[in-house]
Image 1: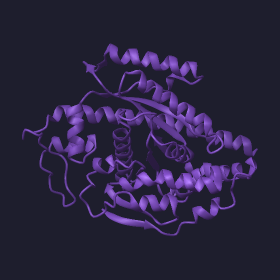
Image 2: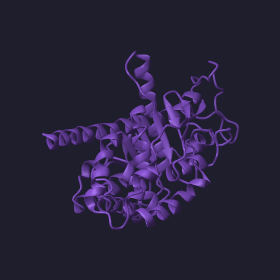
Image 3: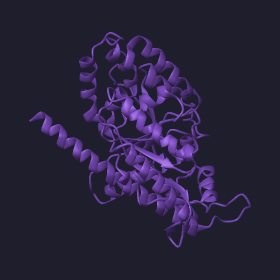
Image 4: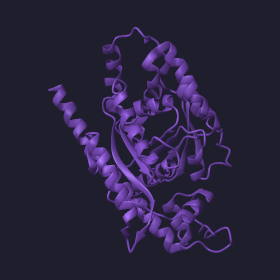
Length: 363
């Protein structure tokens, strides 16, 4: 694990300097069109309300995607690392990877400066095999205000600052998982401008969760000038009971409700993934407390996880000092594995269509 700085980056501020409220649409479209082909490996996780498991989904997705690249490398196939980037002030993603108490934890200061002030992008390389991450935290709470201030001078182009940053490094990564907050519109616009594929988690069955999903669809529609390619690629259910491996009526009912909402919005009800993550709150809490995604935690619980020196990591214990239930950790990890496969399948299908449209437009 080491800190790496991307220093040779072209200025994002210079790229938006010529834009203001009087800039014509063609000028903005030209910049957007230049960016889009470089951002089709950017997967954004977001939802229109908090508490739906956005960061848990994002960190586990990033881990599973990195695990796939590590396996490809072991098989002698081409492989690239995965980048996880969280824009939230909470910094829960940092916690999920056990980075809180490390020397790398600057509470999001360098990430804030890279997005809003042309500073080098700092990433922690090899947080896990084939997984890099930026550090989030309280300083990320300033990103929205700074982007809004830039938009006063440079109009909509200010919301492309993150897209301009990621477009310069995207070729170095197989996937970039972008985790951005549901609360602030400036952050949402910035995230939507950078991502090509959105994944939204649903954790609760109340109407607020459904309204949150509706907020995402509106966000997509109202920011077409910033990103004509972004779409909701998948909806993932987290924390619902399984009885003998099958969903209960609680999940089937909320699925039907959301399918109706999607149909009324002119969207595909099949956005909802068949696979979902079971209710395993105590295990999920232990995963975060131990700074390990579900798959890694399962390896530790079954006595298979090794440290950097090749030594077996002690099996984790719960708050009462008992060994964690290994069988339950395996089931949770398998759920995330299946979910990740479903997400990437949707993303690859969308990318194939985007490439086909691009070729048709060029012919």
